Length: 397
Ligand SMILES: [Zn+2]
Image 1 (tube, protein in one colour):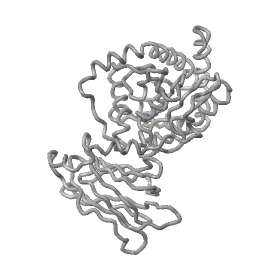
Image 2: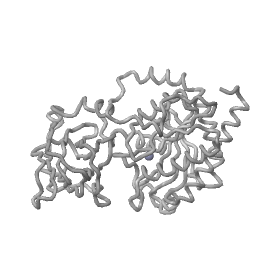
Image 3: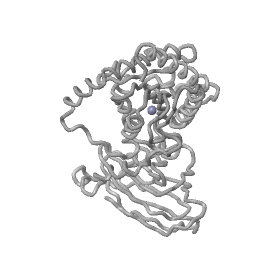
Image 4: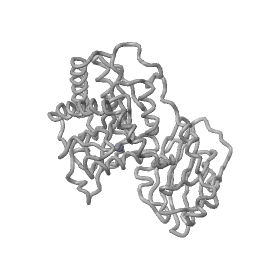
């Protein structure tokens, strides 16, 4: 099912959504979105996992907190947010393959605004394949914006400063993990990323770039490409984890530094990479799996990145040492797994899980501006030590 809906648009205030609700049951589930004015909407479905994607123009979501966290009928949960410049998206995770019926954009009964509705009914996997958004994902990804000039200049640095790329995880439609009091990972890591950028830049020694400096979605692939295009010397990805209660959510805490490895250091690290690698799925990008050449690719990858891997490990060592006085570390603070965003041949890269949003104490710290300053100072000190060591031990670039 692939449907376009259009309706007259006219508003100076911009378009906003004020309410989104599910109704019905597993035989037919309805989605209803209340909008200030009508907008063109595009609805389509994706498999692996089964999702319904609704693409809208610049819609601002003014929905009550917690909207979409709870599912109903055929919908497990849904999320919403900016997907690209002037493009908003809603992604509904469904319990199985569904077909879209009765999509409509109509004037609200009270004549205030517009109501956008559609129904989902179960279908079988075979008929689901017909008319889905397959092939759509490439377009969607292309449509995502290149980060603005101010945050990520496309020209390589002309100075002799080391180029550092800070990569706040998630963003826009992809909120990341949710904390005990419903704060989103994307907001926490962006705040830390900005503080860290300021501190690194303040040393005068680094040219600092960010993969995103606003609440926008950037695919994992784009993050890697940005880093390659700007010839960075170090890539630092920032995340914060969350565990379900049955997995120790209430008591597991602390920071962990991850480096790239095709083979995970342990099961927990493997699961973590799986979770973080799902970012593109969360945003409604269809990820095409390997085509059987994985083994060959893996060997090439191994040859190309051995040196980079050594540098990444060096940085991880320094980082853990510098973080220790400022931060509770997790039980095994240095781990490795196959994180997509760390697959960079040109630059050493680490992914820092700053803490657990599922732990009340960790959440309190992650929310605190003072703590963000403190952790950023520790990371800055680690960057200083790392480059000082590299410069001493090898010819400067
Ligand atoms: Zn994350």
